Amino acid sequence: MLRVIFILLLAVASFAQTLTVGTASAAPGQKATGYIEVPAGSDPGTRIPVVVVRGARPGPALAIVSGAHGTEYTSIIAVEKLITMLDPAQISGSVILVPLVNLGSFLQKVPHVNPVDNKSMNRYYPGNPNGTQTDRVLYAMTREVVEKCDHLIDLHGGDLDESLRPYSYWAPMGNAKQDALTKDLVLAFGLDTIIISKDRPTDPSASRYLETTASLRGKPSITAEAGYAGTVETDDLNALINGSLNVMRYLKMLPESGGPTLTGVARVGPVQNPVWIERVDTVSGNDAGIFYPLVKRGTYVQQGMKIGYVTDFFGKTIQEAVAPSSGVVLYINAVPSMKKGDTIANIGVVAAKAP
Ligand SMILES: [Zn+2]
Image 1 (cartoon, rainbow, N blue to C red):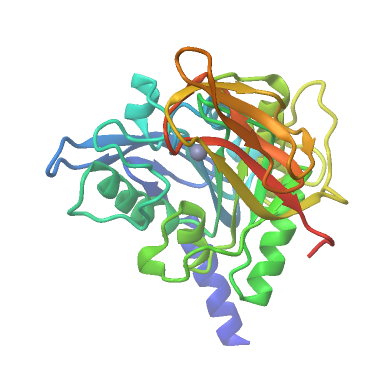
Image 2: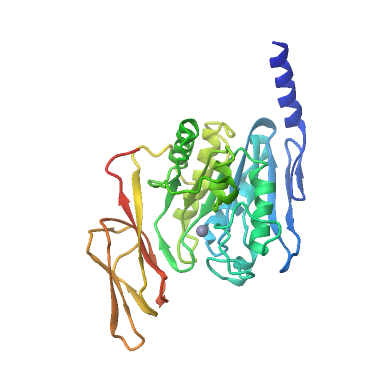
């Protein structure tokens, strides 16, 4: 009994403390803004904007991150809206909000990579303090964000050249309890198409993705994507904002009723019968040329169906792109530019039954 009281006192005492991420420090009931500073190394330093919302009552710490790809605008604007919407007085626990991991990509409108070192900022986790800027940023993200949260949501979307329909990922790691929780989180988020991702790294020191970095450190986490081709459409934006709020409600960080809501948007509960995707097949460009799509994001296609074609610069067709399998077009190249090896489309193969 004494031990229980001691542990409870410890929990209360640790909650009463200020939560500091980078230069943002918030005591219970406060919201603070700041930066995670990334020192210069072989190339220039940078900084990552961060907001800490410390709820008035105890509860878990949830990190909501976007902008690893700085031109996946819908996900970035979703986190910006959450920064304004979240009121510490309504929250149990803490929310760490990181809207823009990749500031260079956002400012210079460079898709996919950090323009400083041409690396994707969701492929080099857990980072390296002695590497190039991307490695150092991801190292700082692991130390400051992953290690200080209990759960993480990584938000993405179609990049400037990707016409994407919304979906989320469920990545079972082989730990039954944690996998059941991440499945609940992804259902609570509410997107109706979920990719079952079973090929994630298992080594915490080579975790590659942000979500995997958190999951391999025992922090049940998910990734969700909405938005496409540089647009910020209301439906996509609301899906990411509502999904994040739904996860907070599931984790009891917000009351079941009340708390922030989007005006004029009905609250959608956990998705009941999502389309589970068991495999993603990629169609790539064979050569440089001009791409013409024949289907849209979200179209269901039959194996062998023509989904687009590539011509040379004189109008002669040099590649017929056909669906390698039957399934849903998760995304299709959104622009005429095509170079050898670029993704033409990702086709999601629907699982025969729910996992
Ligand atoms: Zn992305």
